[in-house]
Image 1 (cartoon, protein in one colour):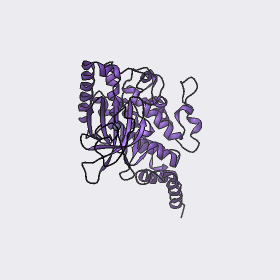
Image 2 (cartoon, protein in one colour):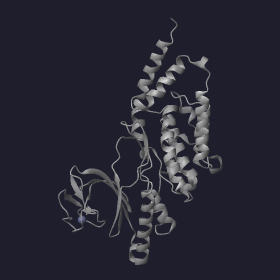
Image 3 (cartoon, rainbow, N blue to C red):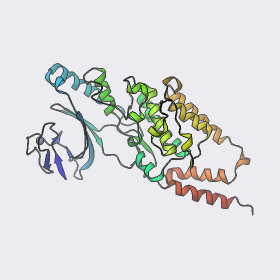
Image 4 (spheres, protein in one colour):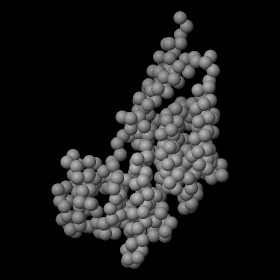
Length: 352
Ligand SMILES: [Zn+2]
């Protein structure tokens, strides 16, 4: 492994991983004397992400390091530079209050070095939703409900603190095979950038927040609301249900989701389809305005599912029950398990 110099103008950033200062430019290689960048993950003009380690532990815990480079015009004016750092610190403090929210990954540390602002996050464990979908094509209705059940309370806490995620997409949803839960990651960074843009410290356009394929129209024009996060999550659910990327699901005018054509192997109840459509409605007016309203509809869906008459408990219902239980235990190989569960249920319900 190499230690990467974080100085934006370094001409030879690769260093042996035991160095404390860059051999080329002399910049310190350890942020806060402990965090070391080992490998670039994403390199933008102003935003860069590195894989790294926290050397404070003997086992060197893996971390992710995000660097915001302030533009020259801000650095030239010391009042502006001071203001940028102030906003950064305030935002980090706000993020820190959410550190104990379940199913939400928040930054573990931050630092300001020269013209670089740094956020340090734990390196995500588990599979991203993108990886899950590559392995098993799609998620069933109960799996998507599990995802919503895990993520919506976390998102609600954010919104109640007047914060938005702004970058919900399959890459930023993590599934833990160990606990069977979904977690929202990459939170904080987009919010920080947005706050700096609001203060005109950073220029919109230079810093694109969120993937356009998952961003609501109002967010793309710089007017994100709570409903914009719900839109992104709704689009993620449509992708999860079909296994098809959103760009192929939205019609050419950007007004309708043609996802139903792709539900060939997946059966979503009409009530659940309605909920997903209202989450991902392109027009803000047609969408859920807040999470409370969405949770109310999901709860009703739950109630009507459990209120099914007992006489209906045929093989299909037995299979669904088995699936419901298996959804937590066997998500990665779920679609194989699904077939087995139906088979078992059929065996049980055969007349004696
Ligand atoms: Zn250097």
